Length: 283
Ligand code: AMP
Ligand code: MN
Ligand code: MN
Ligand code: MN
Image (cartoon, rainbow, N blue to C red; front, side, top):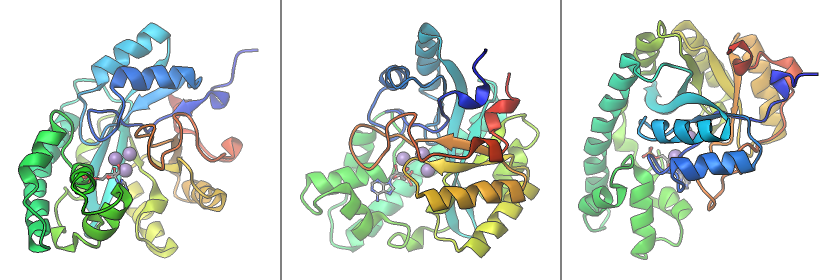
């Protein structure tokens, strides 16, 4: 009997060194294969740079590879992540959003450095840019520097004390509006997935409002599990995906062997039969 699509080991949310992950695209694909993943997407933050390397490596292993990217957006002033999946490599609308967000990242890093200076820290901008190199400059680079320089004991503390969304409250209105991002992509044939819906500072009532907007503006799906989520959160997200007619996506959000991330291909169990799995509509 052929293996049903729904029983494949799937991971549609992962990061490489092209954004803030620790493994190169090749190492990440090798790990996915080792973990017996059979359908895989690389979804770096605001970058498509790792895709050709990952795709080539996946082809060597016969691993089904899906184009992906995790785009930074905002909704009502709250930074939100959206995973776009299954688009063509030369998709101009996605490329344009990616380029726009890369420019924003540089400008935002300057502003983050200034806010840290106001709190008595040295100006870390140049070092953050250097540390980022070809990867996507972001808060993790500032966190690494704060740890290296002994201002905090680990990156978690760096986010708690200096870099969390509350601490960087002045940095509102940084990212493109969710409505604009979705409307510019809604006719592109890509899956537009709300990433890790339980990780935002939203009550269930507000989350429902977000899901209503997401669907109305052209979103096609939502993650019902992202890594090591509480089973009751996954149940809630399964229900919401049915209620808002959004397809269910899954991913580990793997960033590397260190830190709180789950292994590639690993996440809290879902009830596959109760949701409309996003990959079941793919060839
Ligand atoms: P940015 O893209 O610059 O906004 O940075 C966000 C990234 O920082 C997320 O994608 C995570 O990988 C990472 N991150 C967020 N919160 C934490 C935390 N508490 N500890 C370590 N890394 C975090
Ligand atoms: Mn990240
Ligand atoms: Mn994210
Ligand atoms: Mn992610």
